[in-house]
Image 1 (tube, helix red, strand yellow):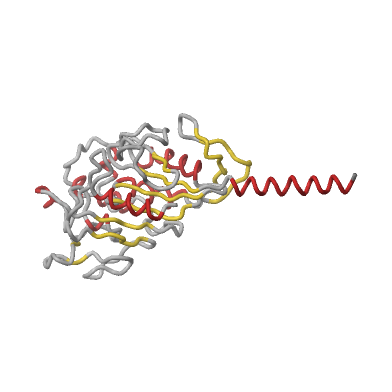
Image 2 (image 1 turned 90 degrees about the vertical axis):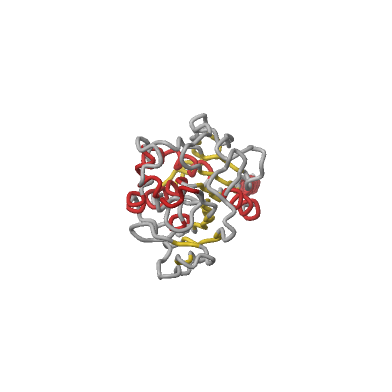
Length: 294
């Protein structure tokens, strides 16, 4: 009888271990930028990006925030999503657009070393998930971040008042404010892969160097420093080049730690906007995510 109990106990423990392994999953989180549009708390609401039926990485989730209020006040919604899908045995790929890059960088720098409850990846209407086994971990399980037109360095459109200055987020997007908001070098060792668009327009004179109508290369390229500077494609003889990868740019400016330029829009083909159909520089990131978030 004692031997039988031992056998049964061993079997049950083994099955519990298998169940734990089986429950492990990868998720792809999409974090929007200014303007919002998706239903906050509804991880299936992809209104900001385009049709929800479009392929966008394994187990894709829309991490919606209002795109209007300050980074600090809206940040809890991002932490809820990371807790839900990026703890325990689960891992996440993260894609951001514009101010979503500022949001994600702020989250990792300020909360990436905090203790989190492991969650069960089953969310309520507020976007919060239940605890899985009552244990905790430090930070989140994140494989990488891919940023479409990242605004971690702010935008001169905010500096110049080209956007409605009554918006709390626009105040955060001033270049001096965004760059001083958190330690951009502290990503908790998570790589940020940057995708910089360059299809500017007639008012792009406000933005230094190459830009995608809303964000200049100094920001979308993850370039360090206290203020924005003019960086361009190699075809522009009157402006220092934004380099690919982690290398210093022409002229000596450097990127933040754990930031690497994966795409520079040499053909000036991609603007800033999704247009309700995963377009612009977002389309380049979506393709990379589909190919790499599995």
